Length: 415
Image (cartoon, rainbow, N blue to C red):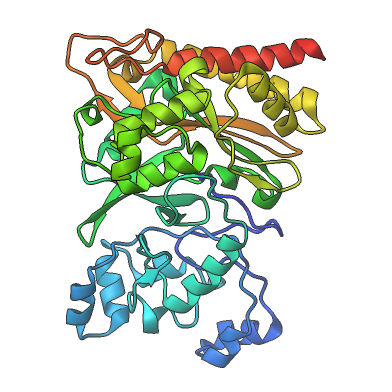
């Protein structure tokens, strides 16, 4: 999930960029080092590879380009390295490239999901092993499955919509001093265009935690509405949204909607906001991985102040005092940053979430999901607390944070 800080391996050894981590030489390796004897593939394959590693980014050619290469993949790898030489790739005599790296470099693209292609400069064998380890602790609470995939040990690839709005939003946030100084959102690394699709690479927030599989996580969607101004005029009828509505409340559709078995996106969005706490409180709980590891996504009926308070209390778990106070302090700091942010003053922020995470060592809250963040016309400033009316672009973002802070404060007062 989305500071890209490189961490040492569990054994304490330093992870080198672009190569496998340093390991202690055995006697045979000392012999090879002195004599310059080439290591055999069978010997190298027995070397234990540490899991923690950080890869230096190398440009990746298109699939067409790979088939056109024809020459030695080793030469192509060096040519693509923007001036990098073999010595830099190897780092030093103790730092070994994977035994098949030269043979298979850029040999194949690695498809990590049906929807999303994560492009890597690593050989297929390496990425397969790395990905298996990475996915053992993989958590995606919400969003379209397959739209977010691991990119490196501490970053993610996220697929963008065709308008590239999320990349633009992250780039703007990264230049806003009030947001940057508190680490308001995942660190933004870059945008990638690949096979006519666009991706952003952002920090995996879970990489900051010791064991993601034992980290409690909650996704809270912020704002009084989850649809854009531009979606108000969209009259396309969608059967899938009708089915979703009926699954929540079979009595909600009108007689006409039942007959045609379809509704507009605006109709569904407004229904969802009324059914949840979004319309009343300015936020709703979207999904959570509770203490103990249970994954919960059925929060559609959690809408009253009391319902939300009870859910938050359950999420805080046994270590209530520490977790609640840390989250409260962080939310207050984030609210202050939003109130003084040039990005928020000039952007309608719809569908964004707060990600709450904690384990036994640390607690964190970050803002994520900016795919529906839209810059408003020059000369206007948004309050993010005013009631929305068509055309004013108000989203209720700060109203939601205000109420979330109040709920957490009330829980503290009760204890």
